[in-house]
Structures are given as C-alpha cells and as structure tokens.
Image: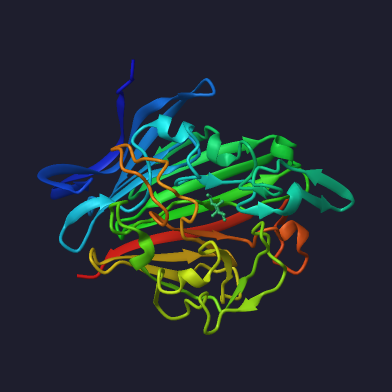
Length: 380
Ligand code: GLA
C-alpha cells in the first residue's frame, strides 16, 4: 500500500495566495494557504531504503520538489506573467517514473558529469577503467551514478528552506578511486533562486565533476518545444566534439556561427546547422571561480526568465535532442524532441584525458566546493 505520511518540518509562516495550475492545458484556479519552509513526504522505496519527497516553498508560493533518490528536482512550480502556475522542469509525480531510468531528468550527476573517452583515464601511473555506458564512452558517472542512488537527507528552514543531501561513494565504486564524501545543499530563496552547493572530499587522488541535469521548459507545458526560447551564454568559445561527443581538444571561437549566444538568439534559429542539435560544452568567459551570471534563458509568452550563475568554467547546453516521445509525463503526455533543455554547469567533458582543460583532479585534503544558482523571474 502506498504510504502517504506527511511530515511537517519547520514551517515558518502561512500566506494566502491565488494558485492557478496548468497541467496538460487545463488551468485550475483556487485560493490556497501556502506554508513557507519545507515538508517531507514518503515517495517509495528502492535498494531497501525509504525514499522521500521534499517540498520547498518560499514566500512567493514557489514550490520546488526534490527527492533524495538521485537528488532529483522533480518539479519547480512558479507563476508566469499572468499569475498562472506550472512546472518549469521535466519530471514525474512518482518514484516509478525515475526507476524506469529516464535520461537523468532533474538529477544530480556524479562522479563525472558528461563523458570520459573510452571509459579510461590515468592518475599518476595508474589507469582506471570505467563503464562504457554511452557507446564507446563513459557518461554521467556510469551504470549507477549519483542520479540512481539514495542519498541521506536532512533539512532546516530557519529563514529559507534548505535540504542537505549526503552520499559516500566507496573506493572504486563505478571504477573511480577514493572514498568520496559528497554533500549537496539545495536552498530555495524568497527571490526564486534555487541554489545548489556541492562539497566533497576524498581519501585518495581522484577526479570529480558534479552537476545537476534539470531539463527546463519555461512554457510549463511539455507539448511546447523549447526551440522558441531565447538564450544568451557568456562564452566566446566552445569545445567542438567528435562523433562520440568527446571534445577534440580545440577551444573554438563561436563568433558569427550557430554556437554564438553572446547576444540573444532563439534556440531554434540556427539549430539545423548543428549536427544532432546542441549538445556542447561552452567555455565560459569568466576567468576565476567566483559565482557569475553565465546564461539567461527566457520565453516570451509566459514572460519567464531563468538566469544561471555558476562558479564552474563551463556549461553543457543540451537541447533535448535524444528525447523522442517514448517517455511520457505522469499525466501521459509524450516528451518529444526538444521538449526540454539543459544548462549543466560543469568542468569540461573528458578533462581527465585533456591536460589543457581546467583540472578535475581532487586530492586528499582538498575541499571540492562549487555553487550554481538558477534564478527565476518574470518579465511582466
Ligand atoms: C548530457 C549529454 C547528452 C545526453 C544527455 C542525456 O547532456 O551531453 O549527450 O547524454 O546528457 O540524455
């Protein structure tokens, strides 16, 4: 029997809001009491462990739901310019949707976001072999990456809703060396920022590249493709790839071509001249590891705008090219090609094999620390 426990955790305040929800084109409007803070509900069980769904609510009534299975952001419901609410990320209502292995919807990715060529890399003189789970290459941490494990969780909500997820990845798990302790802290602020802070330490030299794989569709309705979304990315260069999507090593200028998002362009405007669609790492112009605005995504009809801030040197812009309608939303709508897009902040793909790229090596005693913020707003 499905458990329906709801645990209330540190509810801060209550306010009355007009909530309209737009699911599968049906819009319902109701006056609802919203409680800022964080609640926890049972979400199922896997690997013999209980899985929970946390709901983070801020003073504006924006709600982000996150499960400790894979650290997945399952929904992010916010108002558009007319006050209608809908989720701006792709996701499911139940754990079973995720256990069916959708392509990393909303998930935390580790140990290595994106690809490592041939699933091999060397540290000092030791060669490590990883799963080749993407044709000849290794992708997103392997067969059972951080997106498919149950994380320990704890919450707090003194002023804002905070969810801390922790996972210890054992030495040689998925082929990676070192016992790695990872904490990921999700915070939803009253300014509609979803802040993701990653911290990690290892007891042996290893490689690490953590990210979040949320698919955004600012229309809030997956029947609309993202090709009409407007995008800017503060990157003068990108990393061209081979047929297996492994960087060639070149940092190529984007100027004047389809990868040039230094000024605003519709995603669909030049996509036909990019073989397979966008699935590329952009070399951000920022020159240090401070938290900077690196990309802005917007959608005219809803007025929604998403700004991406990161400490990372790169971002993988993936235009949902492999979505093909075979996966359906919980309401049964097919998720078609370009039904969502990802802006995965990261170090560059295949860095362990590319000495000229910023390093992804983590040493014992070093502290891995990186922050990414997705900030949502509405242009009225
Ligand atoms: C990343 C990759 C893509 C694809 C998706 C998941 O963004 O770069 O090639 O594998 O994940 O489908």
